[in-house]
Length: 387
Image 1 (cartoon, rainbow, N blue to C red):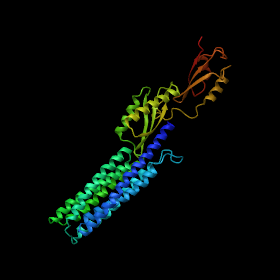
Image 2: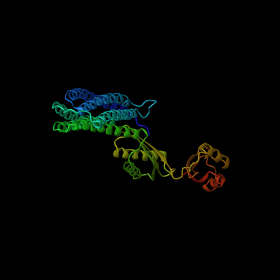
Image 3: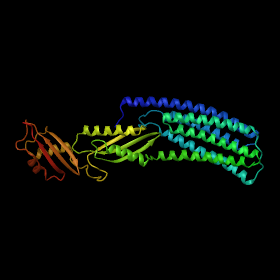
Image 4: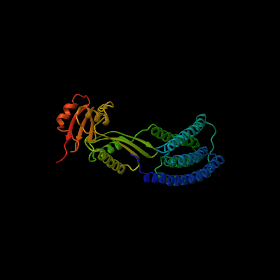
């Protein structure tokens, strides 16, 4: 089922607004990260705090991630085109995976360096009080930018922006660790500073792994949870006119969900009624999950999941059946209305006659006797004109 043109235009406008909001919050965060990174690296170096230096490097990784966010948001918020009919939101997923991988690499390098220092017992220095000031400013600033960025990410439904917000909060967490370790080192536990640096590196690795793994699951088309899928099936089954639901498949594209579903309906209804039933199912599903972008529904007269070969391609077409009727039933009018039902590897016919040109004596019985020698024949009904 295709989206109407006005819906597509509205979607493209929303993408542009989302891209603008994402760029604004990212630039603000990038400037803040750069300032904090400079302050922490300088203060950590001058006042003997390896943990604060690592925390400063963490802030610089935020700057790098902000560049990734800006680039991927610009590309991923472009509308669909001929080569990408579903849009470009998977670029956002790829960007999130790159960001996560970068964090894992940086965290691993920093953690290993400081862990070696702890093991070898190299000379450690007591941090100075300005380290506490720098860490305190970092905690307050990063908690503010986290809340601001996450709020925007939820509003524009961007997993990448939300991931970047959590990256900011990890910087706040790591600054809290610096505060605690610096206070401990100043009280005599000098080794706490190096241990804190290792802990901060571990935090960076953990967040990077989460981003990377979630992105990989999306890139390999991991669907919705079993709970959400079951709720969508219940919604479809409870829709008037739906007999059964099967092959309900979902996949994610950024924050959006793409869905395919087969709906089993009565075999004797019209095509337009089947489409109307599907439209009602779509509306109900969208009420349940507002991030469903596209729903493609397939109307089945039978459950072809249980019996996948119930309708074979070798069954005769409408024109072939008309030719057979003309050859086997004398005087059969080729312009008569014919309704065909392809069910359980057979063709069931309904012939609608009018007064003009109807062959004399054509009944369901005579039609059945004429057609029963064909292996594709199932049943026939002949509708006589009303008097």
